[in-house]
Structure formats: C-alpha cells, structure tokens
Length: 169
Image (cartoon, rainbow, N blue to C red):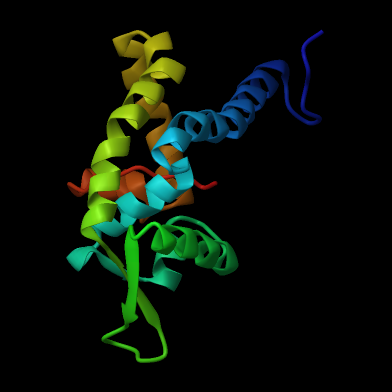
C-alpha cells in the first residue's frame, strides 16, 4: 500500500509526497555535482541573485530575503563566498549601518563556470525524464504556485527578463 498523508486522498498524497521528496533530494544532488567547482547550489543561487541585482550589489539582508535564508545563515554563506573572493563587502550607500555585498569578477567567473554543470544536472535529474509537452505542463502547473508563494521570486523575475538560479537550501 502506498504511503498516504493524513487528510489527503490517494491522488493528493501521491502528488504531495512526490513533490516533497523531489524538493528534499534535488539540492543535495546538485550540491554533489557543484562541489568540485567549490560551490553549493545555494551559493550559486546567491551569486546569481547578486549578479542579477542592479550594479551587482545588494544589502546582505536583501540577499537573505531574496534567497529565503535566515540572516545568520546568509552571513555564514557570505563569509565563505568572501573567503573565495567571489564577493566583497562594502558600506551601504543608502544606510551607513548596513553592509552591501558586491559580486567580484571572480564571482562572475564562478557563475559562468558552474552554470553548464548546473544546467546539465537539471536536465539529467529532471528534465530528461520528461517529454517536451510534459516540461511545458510542469511549468504551467508550478509557475502559478511559485508566484503565489513568492510574488517577487525567480519566476516573477524570469517573466520580467531576469534569469537566475534559486535554491532555498
């Protein structure tokens, strides 16, 4: 007998369990492939978010917000990226109490080096398992849900001409 989520019918349970399982397994699988490049999927997402920002600069608190990371976690991630010279801290022009983060040239190179691996893995892990019409259907199903959960997130930014990689973990 298939696992069921209390309060859900069989079809809802199948869909929900598959979605949660995919969400939990995808980031570690991407991390494994990105590790030789010195990045995690979350770090790559943070770098891409920074790259898409005006002037390739954001307040650390804003980067945390955009990546759905608690500020203490983002501070640790920033420290790792800074140690690799992929980002640099600077005084925030608008608020002297805040710290901005700037993407360095090395950071941009790291993004360009990692994106082919990321794209290959997205295809290998998920997209290659689907027919083109299923990929379109998957996007049609997931986009409205993603927009409702995060109206200013990657799906909305993608529709406005910005592209990116985003990972919540």
